[in-house]
Image 1 (cartoon, one colour):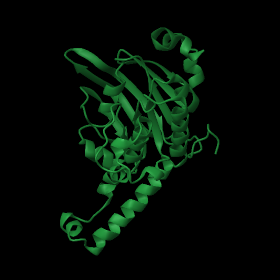
Image 2 (image 1 turned 60 degrees about the vertical axis):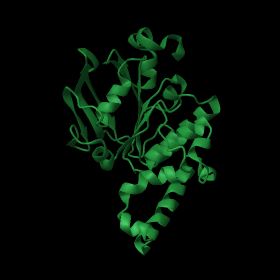
Image 3 (image 1 turned 90 degrees about the horizontal axis):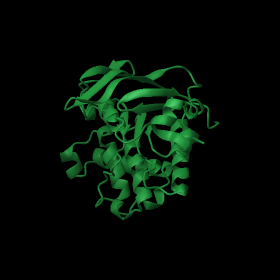
Image 4 (image 1 turned 120 degrees about the vertical axis):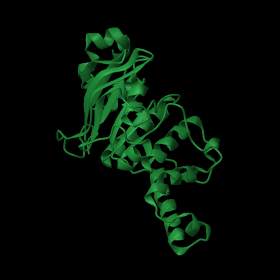
Length: 266
């Protein structure tokens, strides 16, 4: 499958749609009348200067904040008002700009945490090592190893998460999010702190996720990564959309250059 192709063949299918989202804090609009669609099987980047509203937008999409106005429709259902765990169960997962691992747990245990809502064995069965609980635990370990292989971390499975280099901790967050089996994955600054080699590997992993049928939304400051892997780019400035289009269209948009990118796109 080519880098540009999509598993759905490029069909115009809106997996997620934000409509007129607005969120204010203390009278200032962090997100103002933002509307966009994310097609199934695509990689969509959201960029903009610091303070443009990118993280607030993620928080609205994942139920951390309620919008003052607007709606978020996922697979035809308005998800505004649902709890974050309910949104995750529907198939939306995210990572965070600040790493949020369990450092004293092993790498594989961190991934297994993400699989728990797919299991049925309760506390009592698990505590007394009931056969059904043991089967589930074996399945969780096997599935976690498969996910770690996707992220290139299978050899680190039994190491403590806190002992991993920073770049591998970033990838472990992606792996843990994948364990929830999302239809759509929101990545928040996944290349932050990575070197050039690690960033290149991250791009390959994102392609791999796309090829597995996971739709990806990417908030990222690394313009090289954004322009290389994205099908579409949405640009925010002061909480409003100032441009949206293909990477080539964004490169040449004078509003984008003026607001943020300048010579970075040359």
